[in-house]
Image (cartoon, rainbow over all chains, first blue to last red):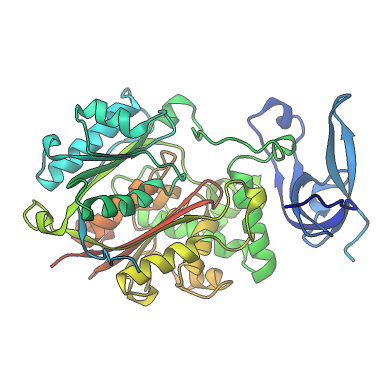
Length: 86
Length: 380
């Protein structure tokens, strides 16, 4: 096992659109996309695909990381579409 | 080279308890009730039991809780939890313990009152900190992502997946104990609300109460009991990941390996199986299971569903109506074991599979994480 620096770019390997949630926080966010993103360096990471209509997300779509600041100490990595599959 | 344990133990008792929407009993009481009923089914009593295998999300030490409830001090105790496949794995564990002479009569049991308590899945599952911020529904979104990838890679259609629920409804309509007995159409499934795309409400199992138990013993003692022995010919267990983020591929599971282990031990292949029980928490499970267990090639599961898995089909699957339509108290493994036993004994009435000799039972646990397979045959 070793640390490898990622460029934060990858493709949507698979995904789901969450339409309902028992959790009050996530209930306020539905519908949202949960995806497994395959980074260009190889590893798979779970994230949300943000800043797009949920019905436009497709397997194979290229995405890049963005960080949503949750607090002073915590930033959550999210992914946004690059603009079309390559 | 390990000793071949094929056919050395048999299932001699099987029972369910408190399957329904409401109950006033505790989980321990339902587990014990199922165990006593399974023992009575075998013509045995609680004093005969020297091995206890149990699982449930309700207790810290399920086998200890069950033994306490039954008032016995066992020689072998096992609360192994690999999710909904646990009790199927316990059959293999009991096989090893009994053939090693460590115990002679073992009870394997499960129960949950999740419907009465929460109205949703009660689980002890922990959520990976690297998944939690993204809000996947556990375990639904994990299965949804496998379904999505399977549809993408193999062209598996929504209609094919809906047909899994339709076939389950046909079986359930013939099962008096099933909690949902009305017939479904493909249109019904496709009109049900999306929960986590592409999974819709009717692709997802029920949430009910209930418990079940089986009794196993060595093949010699099995011959002297009340019901025809159901021999355990093969058993396999494994897990490939815990969290969905770590799944090795989003189209295949460790059922490939557990199926292979079970077939090798049994000296049989998929072509020899007359009736199949696959833990159907979701419609996609049946397609993935049929592929990984060798009933068709990878990617052809959808077309296998087109050919039929319902009543009258060449390969009857989930003859009780499954978790989709019969009942689903959380970890469904015990109920598919009980159904396989009843099919092989010929006790299934309107849903009986003609000339059922070999049954395969496969459990999925977690998010396609824990896997266990057993192959059973009617003795004699």
